[in-house]
Image (tube, rainbow, N blue to C red; front, side):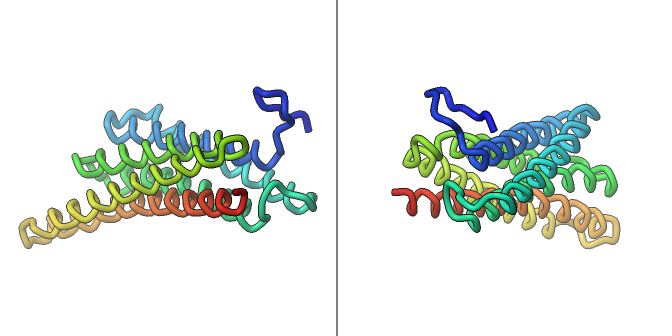
Length: 208
């Protein structure tokens, strides 16, 4: 396979595929942010497309794992990192689907959570781009990813608290349940980004 880095060094296929998955996470979470801020149909379609493209990259990576004996780092770490990156996109797409299905209007909390998720996607991509040649820089981006996940969780807790402080009537309760379901998808996406960052941290420790 002809993968080459900017320095002329051949790029390992697993590093390349994981980087491509991280790129899909970055553009997918950006598209999700555009959707929750504008409700644009084009943005929703992009989230779906990137999620499917990410699935295909993971299929290729798993196929290569079955065929390859020597890998740049532990096979389990490659598998898990690919899984968690894929999960971020899965939950991003689930967010779009349930916003539509449950007719949830994005509020300030959801927009803030997705914005932090988008920033986590940016950091994950930077981490993967630096992992091979600058592992300590990759580790710094992994830590930044984890910080973004903490921010998502803080907003999530405040959002849920506000939901439960509303009027005790059937209409509000139904609205609360629908909205919380959407919040949880974004929270889960951020959680998987955190897990991906943990794997990157483990890989860096083993490399150094």
